[in-house]
Picture 1 (cartoon, rainbow, N blue to C red):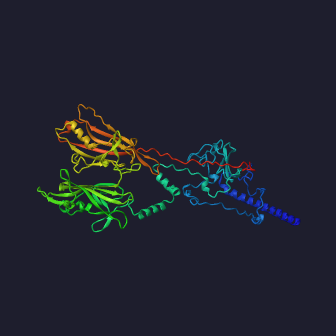
Picture 2: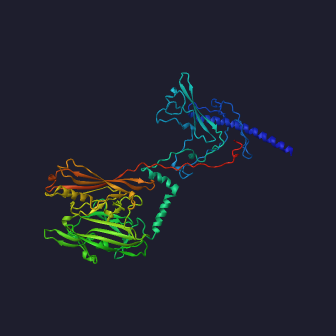
Picture 3: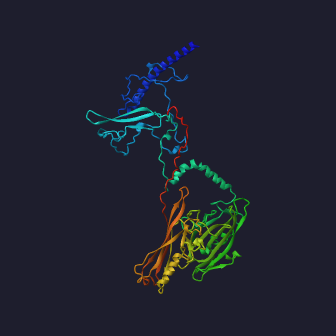
Length: 639
């Protein structure tokens, strides 16, 4: 047995000696290749294996260094190669990682710089030379004037166990000028806890996070929504599938109707599209209140009795499907009121038991060839009553019919549809919690018990509605509600008579501008409750003073509402909150005698919404802390 051990030891030492000799030749060849590869650097020298010493770069004539190489495990040691052939040993190729395949956020990170020769921490100016920055490529003409190198060593990542390090030093030439000496050398990290190999090089660099703002939030959110909340495409597909399979109406679904002959189609309301003329193709969506005003240019002699858009039957002789199933119950439209309006604007309620009596009627006037058409549809107001599960229970309609002549063309029509849930409070919110664009502002007046809302909430805070003849007194009760986020301007004209006095004119104009029961408070949020006065914003008044009140007549001619709002909460789902509202009334200080005598006064009302949202503050989660208790000899024998 002892003889066998001796033979084994002799064979082992002989193989180790051969391995050292062949590796030394390989190191010499590798040094020659490294010297050629680094020739693009200025005065680059290849240091020896010992980082503490500094010698010129290895050349082909340099003697090979002695290197201590540990024996390879059995079965892995390459066969020794002849030294005269100058073959370099086969090296292990570096790991290449394709960005975007190692993690969900890899495609968003830039490619890291892993070459120490290309890094320059002191290069701060783009296209300019930084003083004493020896690695600045823009300092080719100023290197001779440098006094020292501000950065003498560049390390890519100090956490790696072994890496290339770029060093820079100054030397003097024969003329006394400075000369930069740069070199690339391999350094070994003495730290025990170092990174031996990185399988994902992009993770070694830190990408500056993009700060989300109002302008770029959607773009930033779209990059990370899939990582945090799953695949957005899959979620949208699943949502659409749920909407399709749901038997009841969901928010935004088109309402299905069925006429007398059994034809099913989508409920459509006339609305203006591009121009002011009516287009009968605006679909009504479930739970989306809509209102529209448009005009029609007609030939009364031909269209009075034949054009369906003028007939009441076209708007009430239909039924709505209670849900989206094939066996849905047909809910007929119930006419609750019919109002007849005469040529002078007088309105009269009539009996609704027999609506066939109110078909359009063509009449010839005695004066010339003028004709008159009665029972023409001017307004249609739908109200849809639905249950908590999205089933339509009832649909009522209030219609206004009028009489028009050929001189009143083009005629104007108004349509509105609103949705109300059964057994709910009469108060209707305009958002939850923030306001929704297009919904009316909630307003009311202050009392000892809280805020009292207006009886007609859609007209609590309203503006003048544009009339056909632009006369302020023609239809003083018709007003347009102020809708959140929509700037509007409307006006009319008022003729002053000779015997009008200043007080009477001021009261009339102020009533026309504000309307009846002008509110004092506006809800800060779309769902502010009346019993919480702190959630309501007072309407501030600002009136332009007149110069000489004793010699002039102060007449209010313009009412402007300035609504300031802000975005509340996270940018993922910001909520609109009204923070202030100001009523600005501008008066005219002209003499009443100059304005009277049949003169026309222009009256204007407007509203503007101003976004005063502050810059969003970026919030990041706190860095996690490591609270681990290790045994006292965990690092033995290192410490």
